[in-house]
Image (spheres, rainbow, N blue to C red):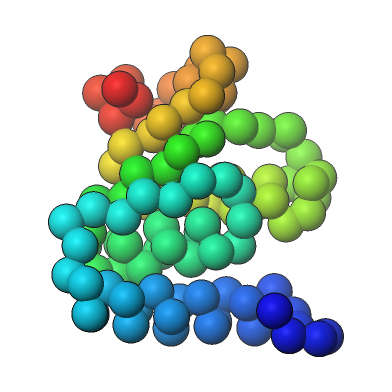
Length: 107
């Protein structure tokens, strides 16, 4: 964390850092938990590298894109990049199904 950093700064540094780890480790899958900007960045990096992404706590929604900010939009942007949705509740699972995620992606 840097004093006065913007979300763009966090996203840029996270993408660069994750890319470095991917280049070094060559993972078969990437998994992240939560709804932070770094989770979204991990999902986006996975997509860029064509590595499957698993999202723990998938499908949580408030239906208000600005609340909580920026977590709600991170959730919504992460879902289409995810191959394995690990929804913590039946409501979260239903949210994913409403967004046209396939049931077979939700073990």
